Length: 316
Image (tube, rainbow, N blue to C red):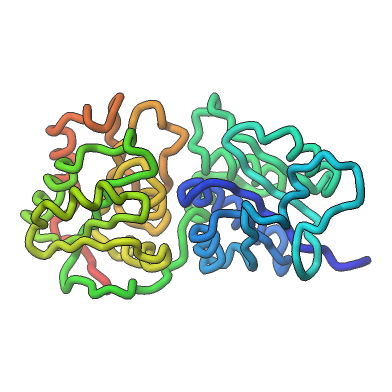
């Protein structure tokens, strides 16, 4: 019998989208030990998956090698890979029904080994938990809450390549992929001041998509002991988040990263994005019709529930 070829894992979207599939990808690695995995995903999140040991090679979502997945051609199979063995199994996770050509091509190229999971918003499960349960059922694995949470955790990538404070610190991320999901910046400045009063140093973090927000942030004076970090590599950011005593963020990929890294998370959500986008882990949620409508008293109470520095075991 010829050796099994690689498994092609297809998960489009940004950081949060890919992180929701990490528990399911980990199940595949357990079910097929030693089998090569090719991940079709966005660049930086895909590289994080490689660092986490979940994939061996990244294929560009926009590259010509994946064109065969969107073709109704009945002709000879087009190579999906420029070099090495061709994948002979496909696993894909989508938030909505993929294009009909994708299903047709998956069936033509992979037959019964073309597995596609589409999220059901009526399930009332988080996207990550729904993908995990459907994948576990297909593989014959247990899909308990504890199994999901342990599969969702990232490995420790080590300390980030930035100087860390000598005492416990918090991390705030006031951005997201959409301004509609953002609480007003003053909410995060108030949080920084509340943490500083507790004795926590901290970091504001921002990414490349938050240019306008960065300009506004740079106009404000940071509390003493606080710094602004821009565009950290994701593995460094995960290392920072794994070491923080508190994290506050909007509904964003960084918030999902904080939860997967094991940080104590306070996430600010629009009602309509729950429960689908609820992160895993130690996550408390404040929600309203819009993040700007979250009552300030609720925010103060949630911040007060983070422990004082004297009660925190701090590791560099």
